[in-house]
Image (cartoon, rainbow over all chains, first blue to last red; front, side, top):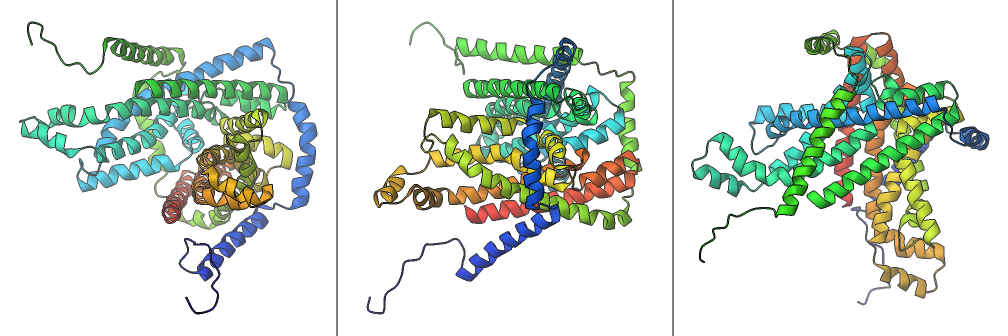
Length: 266
Length: 264
């Protein structure tokens, strides 16, 4: 410990100090470039925020005529119905896809194909899927069901496939060794291992689907979203607030139901 | 070990009834929902044909259109980056309020929770509708919408991280005479830094996906081109845009997963 004084330096994840500063500079540069590209000049932001005071005044208090309230109720029920139906259809379609997308149960080409499908489903926002569904089969809740089903399949089969990859192959081998047919192997060796997670995931996805179904109406795929967009376009901002409050309430209730069910039954 | 023969059962009677009722409720909900919806299907057998028809019209993708979407694509990435940074700046105070161990009192705790809930319950596209009114249409409204949507996510998860920290270190820094800003900087921040970086990168990746649709309400990004092409029924251009979006999303997702792996 002879040689001069050494100052303590904080440990860092970066291999060298230079790399650290290069990464920081890169991130800062990227953000500044983004700010310029987006046109985020402070004057404009300040101006917008200045206007927000009077705009927020336009949004309050929430109000809806009895007819509008009835319309919120009807379309909200349609949203919930869309979410519920497509949770079921989505899960039913997810099961075979999940089995084919599990590395330990499925041959390589089939595995790649299904993983690809899952990536496609997850990559596109529900609004994009929604607009294409509407163009394909017309306005209305059916397009919404198609959209949410498609999104559900991507989410659900990915998580289910990961669960399937984690199962204990010992019990599968044990069932096989006792002379079971492939169907029996699935039923008694694989299924019991994933059922608990399955129930929880379904309720969780239902909760996410409720959120999605309140939005995709914006592109005409059924549900409360269409009412919201119309109200915005008519500058009927108090009605907008009423609709938003209804959406927040439904989302919170769904989240609560989903949390309770997952805690108690899984 | 006498008379009665007992069968093994996985659940006791009460839980069995509970599970049965739950299944029943779910089944009734699905059937009821289907009947409630006015789907207006007249000829259900035509649906696969129509979807197939649309997909065939998308082929082959219009490669020449790629040149027109590079600009909007870059804009999408910029919106996501700026939105994430904005969200991060806003989320730190929200997280401190929403964490039980750092919030000053019960009122601020609930304030934090309310901000998190409102931000999370309102979809990006609705935030965008709001900010387009405020800032005029364009990518700035999109970036602010992305930021407001992400605050709840980051605030909630960061708040949970802050609740998990070792408070001994915070006490030690305070005992050494640090001001509250210094306590934050040397007592709390180093403990949540990996989570902070990881969550931000994760949210950036989600935001890329979200900002692809902002164009629908005039808030910039590649969505503008996409919806223009859809409305013009230029399906081959639509296919190009979709492929490009897919590529960008897959790339950012792998980048995000790789970086988060490094930080953890």
